[in-house]
Length: 272
Image (cartoon, rainbow, N blue to C red; front, side):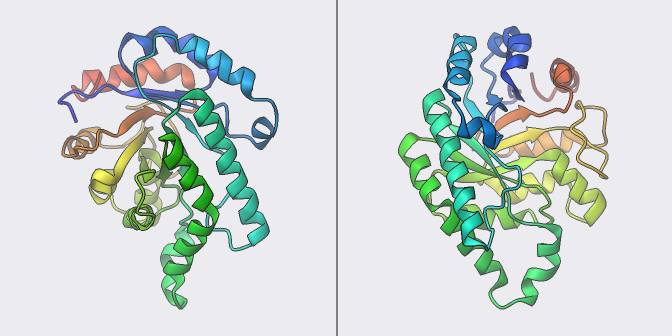
C-alpha cells in the first residue's frame, strides 16, 4: 500500500449525489448500497444503473457493490433456501456486470456458535465449506467470467482465519477476504476475539476489501471514525504491511459523516 492511502466510501446513489465532488476529487474507491434488497434485484434495477453511470462520470477509483445479505447464509443446509441464496448472488453479479463493478461483498457464514461448536461435530468445519461451495459455485464462475471479486466479510467471526481458509478453498482469483473493522471490534470486545489489527494480519494478502467503521466493542455501531475505541494507528500499520492494495471503504450509519471520517484519518496522518 502507498504510505498515505486514499480511502473511499460506501453509500447509496442519493448520497453519491451529495458527496460526488468528494468522491471525484481523488481516485476514491466506491461501494454502492442500492442493490442489497430482494425487491430491487427482482425488479427493474436498470434505471439505478443508468443513474449511477451518470453520477460516476469522471470517477477514477474502483467500483463495487454490497451484495444481497438480508436473511441469507451461504452455508445454509436447506437446499431449497440455498438455491435462493445462490440466485441472489447471481442477481447481484448481473448488476456488477451492468455497472462495470469489480467487487461484491458477501457475508461470512461463521457465527459465534460455530466457533464454540463446529469441532464437536464430525467434519463440522469441512461441511460448512462444502455447503458454501455448493451455494456459491455458479456465482464464483460468473464472477471469474466478468472480472469481479467476491469478498467475504466477517460478521460474527471470532477466529479471523476461518474466512481465509474458506476463501482459499475456492482456489479462485474471484474469491477474497473482506474485513469490517467494527464487526471485528465487536467480536474482540464481546466474544474474546483478537483485536482488529490481528484480523488484518490473519488475512494477509488475501485481504482485498475493508469496511472502515468505528465502534465500542459492544455492538455494530458504524460510527464515524474517531467516535469509538478502535486503534486506527495499529490497523493502518497492519494494512501498510500488505501488498494486496485492499479497497478501504468507509461504511457509516450516518452517511453525512463520511467527510468527517476522512478528515479524522487525515489528522492522524494515516490516509487521505
